Length: 176
Image (cartoon, rainbow, N blue to C red; front, side, top):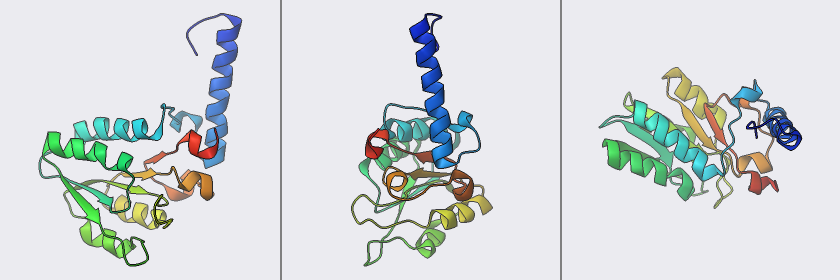
């Protein structure tokens, strides 16, 4: 893709870029330029953790995740914690297997540098209050990464409505 002038290469490039436009429409992103393809969701979360974490997270800074996170949304932050001396805070789930916005609110401090949460738990099926989390985070200029691997296949997602900074989707979970 994008590496030659042969007919097959040009056709592949057009199809690749067309796929980006289809994803943009599917999730209602503002632009197809917001769509970044990686080989899987784990790589996408690792990409955010390693680039954002390397640049903006320092010793003593906090990374907020939940007890509901898939391994793919914990391990990359664990490595940032180890490398940078950051602190991972876990929002607890209640008896129904959900994380309430009040649990998130009580854990956010001026040291919170990113909030990384699942949209829908792959274990409990709990749906996180993403819009409320993003609204809270945006007041404090904290970026939000959403693991949408269970969200995108099961509920309509609208990036412009949610307003999160990163939304990770796995194509194979949507039969891609």
